[in-house]
Image 1 (spheres, rainbow, N blue to C red):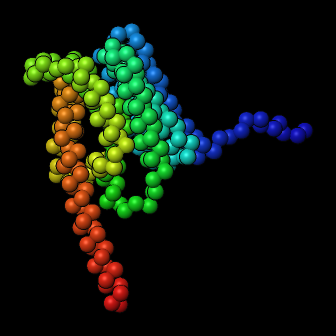
Image 2: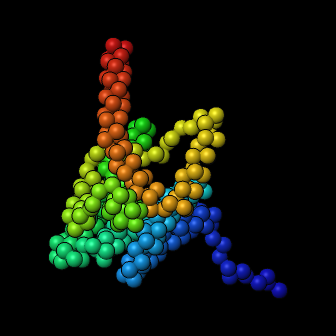
Length: 267
């Protein structure tokens, strides 16, 4: 009697490893789309929190993929598509339903500009050469789309934080479209911004880092919008610092490279 054939096909380890990060990416997409539904219902505070969770999913999928060796071309393209939805379309529509709709056609035009710039930013990121010097991993070219998706919500975040009214009276009808254009320019610009990918922490400083993280996330849970507003402003202040830091490192590397080439000519 012939043994019964097994009709089940065993999935290879590589394929199984690809599933998890892609699933996380798709969860992020669903959260980003759900934020639009919250905005339509007028629940703008929950919509902001949904974008934050989408950002968390975006931060996790790539790191998990590299950790379990589950990176793939499909995952890269899916991640970019998810970013366009979660940090391009979703924030634009949230701000449109909150403020920009009252500017009629101008408001919609501003939304279109922002989403197009997010798409262009991601397209440029995908075609950039991976054979860059290792020190460049510390910087992004232009503002990354997840950061742009949160920064563009800053006027809305300020309105919930209460900081705006405390510091000065804000004209949101003027601020929101201006902010949209400014963030759109930063997205497609070549201004270097910190990527925070390769931060080296000394072992003796680990406990202080953990304490700082606990303190930050604890404050984020209690004073969500105040912490978000202050963190966003700090990030914006870091942009000129990252620019000059990048120029300084590039100059040092070019000098070293020129010296090496001169030495090779002599030899």
